[in-house]
Length: 395
Image (cartoon, rainbow, N blue to C red; front, top):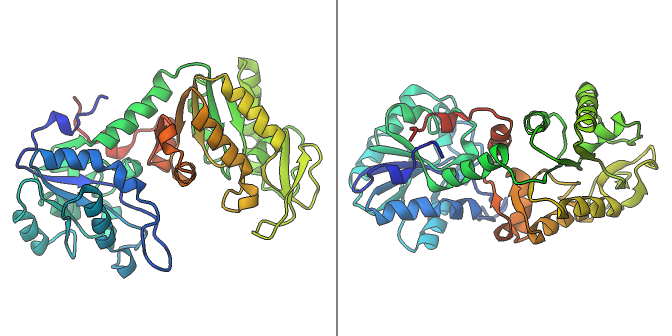
């Protein structure tokens, strides 16, 4: 960890602005929080600051209000859940900047905690507006970034604020950077990358950057169709990224010449349509009917991937193996999750929908690390600098 953390700076009695990622999923009908794992992930930093009598000012976005007040995206329900989790009151403000907010902040005592209103109610947040960043910074003496999930965004609350305050990482940010740096810099071998999701284009940067480090690629999900097409297989109605065929061919060719296993599905579940009423059929990869979509990896592929991973010391997983949200097409993804939860290896889950799946299956505690940032973890593993990390003070 080359960045300073909250432990490297004096926080006692200070006003500390903490950027958290409390962008939790909400029930469409009731507005209730359906998964509080992002709130729980920030608790170590929050508790540390409370224990050191800091005046804790939390800020987060929630949903996509597009720079306008959205009554369904206020942070009050989050404050209520956080209050329950830490067993102490969490006050809120009707806005995130301005004279009234400053007055509330100035009345805080050491160990108090305040959650500001949704910062994306202001369009200036995503625009990284200097005046908005300054108004946020005016609330505090110190800035702590514990929102890895937004570290790849150059917003006012992730980058702009750091120009005005000493900026350090929270414990969650530290944990994320250490876990993902381990994958990049010193993975235990054999090292496998299990990749799924819809598009090859989403993973090209990752595939290229970890190419010299992995021993095996295991490819499932919608992105497998493009690679299968390169190998000459017919993939029915499944989407092929025509503009990525050359890159896909080069990746397979380079893997072969470097002795890297590049495993593609050997069978698949196919369906004539993709909806909850659809019935899937297991077919060999060379027998995919013209009028069907690949909707999941098949049972032989599940076993092939499991066998390969059983011999690995490090596994990174990002992306579902099929159309996970439709129960009958979720077997491949569930099979991978269960396998990774049982294996004696370093298992790193790359955030986004993959993290949500593992959390939903109550398997997070059995993984070495479950990232809280989908886009951020991919960008980091692509070798790109994350703006929200770059602005933090070096040790």
